[in-house]
Length: 188
Image 1 (spheres, rainbow, N blue to C red):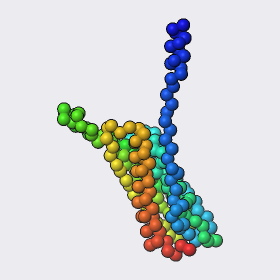
Image 2 (cartoon, rainbow, N blue to C red):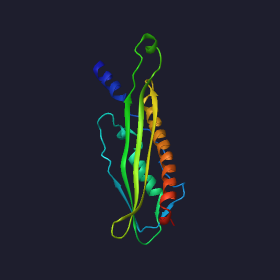
Image 3 (tube, one colour):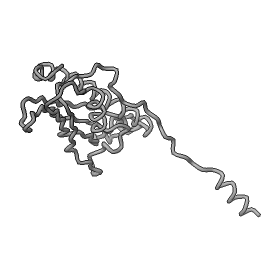
Image 4 (cartoon, helix red, strand yellow):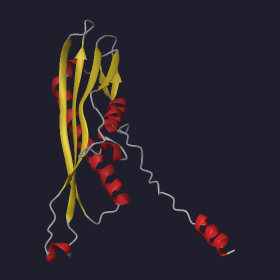
């Protein structure tokens, strides 16, 4: 009888993983970049890695997915010839272990234990009907943050989401500036 009561009590107690929900990262609130093209192609050269120090697969929104969303939300077709080709060259997130002070004083402190670095590199090309590149721009940026050893996984996920948001804000400014300067002949 004691075994049955213990078994029932233990099976009634279950732990469920808390699933955090983050807002959809979108760029629809920004004006569309109207390209005088008849087609827009997205090409990703990113190879997802599960090996350290790569951690993009852990992020609520990976840099690669954020770039794809940016392209779908911001770039629009406004022509009847030419093709725009957006190539994702690099979209990565890495975790770097920081050196901790192992002295008695260091053990008593809440130290910064990890740095998370995110990277984006993209090229936007305009190709003519013969697939000859007529113009291009690049956008490259990075963003990083450090976290303390006491940061919970839940808090880290919030930090990662905010990190990618900041990365994309910088990327958006760089691409907008480069497009305005170098692709003016292909803007509607």
